[in-house]
Length: 166
Image 1 (cartoon, one colour):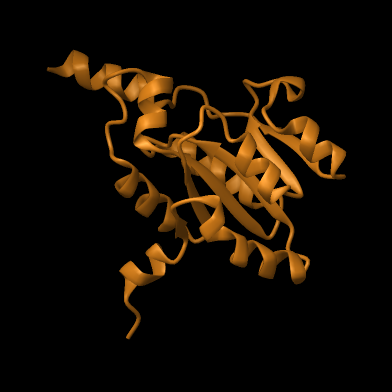
Image 2: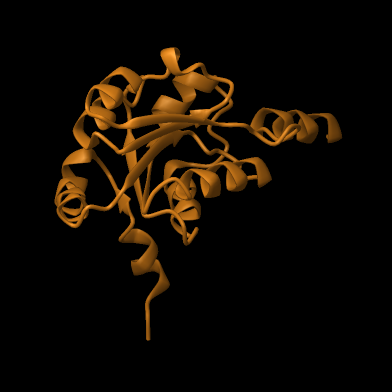
């Protein structure tokens, strides 16, 4: 019988060094690696749509997940709402997510440089010229894509709705 916690935990890496062996296996078998990143604090339909569309762009979806400290620096003192262990396990539960790598840096540039994905993905609220790592991925013959969000879905909007309901 399969232990689901082990299955989920097998997709979660605490740093890029822990992921290097798996990355090497995927590259050796010509997997098309897609990379995106974010905090993914409260999962909602917008996240699911975005991540599933990102996964469709390749054969392996790798997510750089902002650590709790990194999320707090980016989003403010009330965030994250869910800790990094919870956020990483929820992401790992999606069948189309192949790896989650926690990072504490201000940007995912170090991860992107180490992975050099075939496809780098961000939301369409970014212009390609302003996407961290775009220059490096393009220089390595990779692609940079943006995905349009479903309007009306954001963690901030959910947080505000909860606050107003109190």
